[in-house]
Figure (cartoon, rainbow, N blue to C red):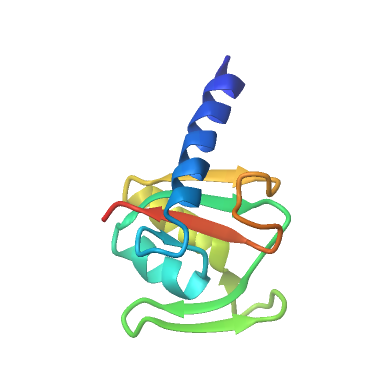
Length: 113
């Protein structure tokens, strides 16, 4: 039953994202998603369970550094986006990729406004 409800909700969010792809209602780049997560603008965030992005984000300066691999001096930027989305009342879904716009997409967001 819970799996059915989850599938229905994520399917609806993925369809809405697909309808608004490449508009100001959605984002697929971590550079766009992180500031919006911190600002509370994300309604739903879908993460690819098979992907990761490492780096440092400075919310005061909206500065972002992407790194090729994890280290002691960086964090998972996808986890950071997920945490901030949930802290601001947004929903976070983890998918094996089937609900994302393309196979290359690591994450996508549906914005509230």
